[in-house]
Length: 483
Image 1 (cartoon, helix red, strand yellow):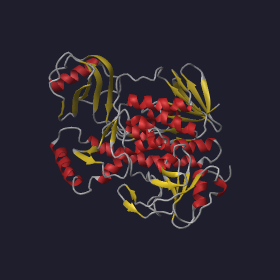
Image 2 (tube, rainbow, N blue to C red):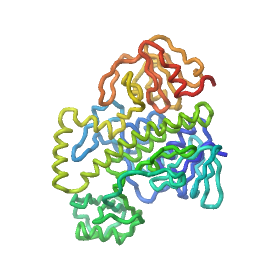
Image 3 (cartoon, helix red, strand yellow):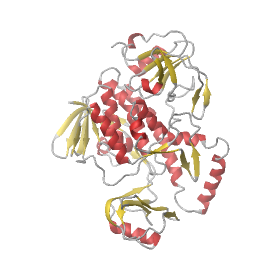
């Protein structure tokens, strides 16, 4: 029996596999694709918080070395400046999904996580002791838990009977990489149907996006449908042929009613789908994976009780819902309409005034995510800033301390602390930091005298010249005392 079966080897599944391995869990990834290669170059890109998560594991440089950084994001027609956000990564990283998957795969293989390809999951049956995973080959696997990271049409979610709720699609678009026989006379346009684009990829292939006149069927599109759409929009099909890949996407927005049902959990597109506008999809999945991985690891190892898994839904469902609202709002501007253009112009004025665009920029980048009911010190439940702190071994970045994916207790000049029965699970350091503490949107906040940082980089406890509440926080997030 495996501890955890992960279904799907996309970015979410790979990130979760790495997190579980760091947590000391026996996890296996099942993928129906026989090869790690994706047909064509799938759109991709990640924002600041997702890059920070990679940085927390010491692998951000791999991605930054291959992608292109863009110091802006967009809402409506407004380019939002990211340079003022308090992060080491104030930019969007443009990188194809193919490359993101390849780099994550390299990391996961280094950690020794097995990936079994050509394994199609056809059903899931959970009981009090574990989960039976039915395979298309006729065999089955047994695991203590299963995580569906198998996309918007998730077999795991459907088998578990978890609802997928939200607005239906209002329009659909075709996207493809093709060869052409005619010269590209224009890069694209926006009309009353939507956005249409043609972009030469530099190797003889052309990326084509065309919004359909009517909502397309829930089937794989054909090259003839693409040709027809191009003729309707541009008056020619540019002689498209030899598609490397061809797909249809919509602006449907759905979110799982629950990210957990007993021993079945969901992450990434299996838990939420939305318009690709804004490029949030991959980053949301990575954030799900990093939130879930250490929690599931502690539960599997018997360190924490099942209630810790309930916090996964409690934290990530609201964060996902807020991001989906952004994608729905942004998708309104994806067609030419005088009323929407008037709204876009008005938003441009509002967001461009002073720091008006900062809250939206923080939302898009994921830097404003806050877990928990709030109250107390502003740091509580928010991402720990990546400070350069003085330690007994020299200056270190906070994110460097998180590479092993373990909790970190930092003393910052207050009274000495005692991790007590949790000392074996928590890295405890006496440190100092003399600079300002700044949070996205909130700005500068009062410096704490100590912080407990979870493995995912979020602050679980703040000390203010006292150890009050530390033991309770350690028990909540680091498991039962002892060990």
